[in-house]
Length: 116
Image 1: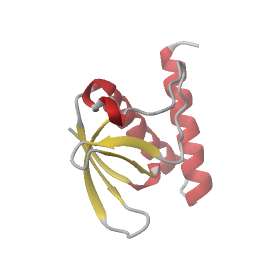
Image 2: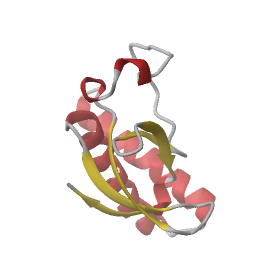
Image 3: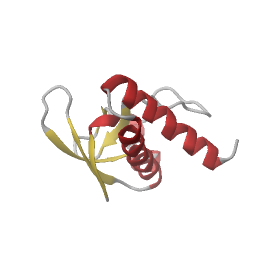
Image 4: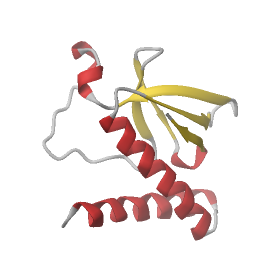
């Protein structure tokens, strides 16, 4: 499977998850899924990236600066489980919060803004 097919597959899995869990139309779910997939790419490739989402527990709008690039995460904070082919949980997107220096996650349907 080539990279484009994997990327498209990820977007569709996220879109179906958003639609099934939150009752969005499939078009709306796809739109949100593309934003999430682009953010995931930035989280892995850049030093850090800014984004905004709504916290599910409190409803507050949270502005985050995060990364998944291990070069920018302190060694003691690296994930404990190493895998050559890590799977991504499409129901909660984990990221390393650069401000709090801790791992956090957000629900894909709560992403509001994808800016760097």
